[in-house]
Amino acid sequence: MIIVTGAAGFIGSAMVGKLNNKGIKKIVVVDNFTHPVKNKNLQNKIIEERVDRRDFFNWLESNYKNIGFIYHLGARTDTTEFNVEIFNQLNLNYSKTMWQMCSRYKIPLVYASSAATYGDGSLGYLDDHQLPYQLKPLNPYGDSKNDFDKWALQQDERPPYFAGMKFFNVYGPNEYHKGRMASVVFHAFNQIRNTGGVRLFRSHNPGYADGGQLRDFVYVKDVVDVLYYMMTNQPESGLYNLGTGQARTFLDLAKSVFRASNLNDNIEFMDTPEDIRDKYQYFTEARMEKLKSSGYLLPFYSLEEGIHEYVNDYLSESKYF
Image (cartoon, rainbow, N blue to C red):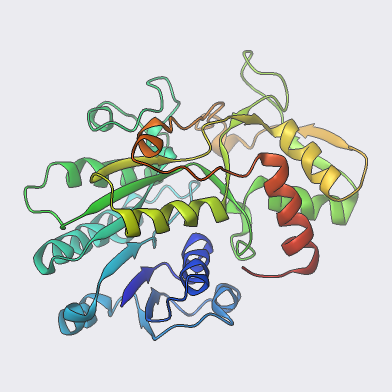
């Protein structure tokens, strides 16, 4: 069996869909299944069993002999949450227990790290194993992910295989439940549908024009392709960036949503909210040499290709992957 934690969430449910598309049906999904909108992500998925995240480790004690691989994608991902204890409980400590049990029972593990670990990007975006000790994330979410990366790298007892995937700005189907934390593509589409225009954050950094802020936007289908590769090929254990390797501007993104919607551009700017203004990343771009040198050769969707498919095949009809 394959375990997917965070399975009702955005990337987790897409991973379940990817596994199903590969003919894999013996999947145990782990999450808090009390969120009705999130649960729609698992409709029409073929799964073996649902396990509440609070019960999972007890369940694992009784079922570890049947488990071939774990994708630990469940986490608190709200970058505007500043209660450190929430992240200690749901991200750091839960992941430590997952690591320890995978080490004890010899279960390969892929887990979700984040590009939020890189902070303001002043130290670059290289996925080596020395940089985490120098990084200063901009919020408790990023801290929790970097703290776990550092802890994992220091462990003598390890799973037989592990990979910590540093997700960059993921967008795509199955993020309907994410609210404020949904991708800019999702919000832009809904703004256009409701108002006919898009409002982007104004730049508060003199080095960037309004809308010129840069992100490495990566389509969720590319993300799950890479995650599947990590399971089936198991390149060298360690940390891996997961982006496209090509930063694009928010203006590029907004214009692509208008084009995918067959509409003319209508873009305005608004001040970045004060609660996140001093924590805002103006540039992210994954260094992808490590993954590619491991043998991963599939091309990534361009921003225009990904947005066109997302808007026309999913958002416009409220469909799921």
